[in-house]
Length: 248
Image (cartoon, rainbow, N blue to C red):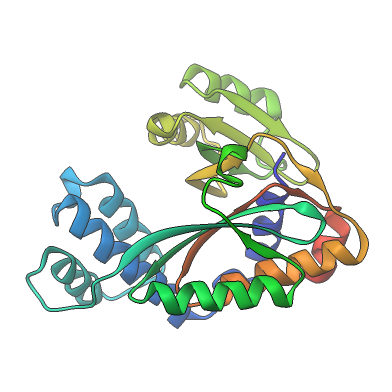
């Protein structure tokens, strides 16, 4: 199981993942704007926009903010021209990282990220250096106390899930990206409460990181998550859950 999934889950439980409302709104407004620019302003015909709007509503973003972001994306209102960029690098202990950003100034952003990586013992790498380690997957997270693994497996596999991974902290249901929504619906229909569901870059293998390198890597993750241009981070680290809880 991805250590990054556990890290995100721990931070959600402690209320520290995107804890500041302004940070959440900034990230979501950028995503809505880009989604509307790339796929149009009709959420019924634009799955990416539909997902972004649903997340914005779940975070209590005012409808007016959502509408303005859509119109900036479609060009109906003037706005900033955002670009999507993926940066790749390595953290302490050799953990691979992919960092998705949405920025209006690539030179500023890459300089910021290079500084953050260097400060915490990592380094940016050339495009393609770590991308091969990851594959796009739908990932549904469920707490182990919600239902038995057998119940989850029965509902998920019938809906087309590819794999299920579990430990004492978390159960992950892996799907093809196009099967995420149908699998999520099948689990919900079966009365299984879902912690989160998203399309992500899932690591094909993991790297065990321990001690001071692990602490430094988690600080690097925190610093990257706090940058205003960073939308998502993916990593293949495997760190002891107790240490993650202490640092988290």
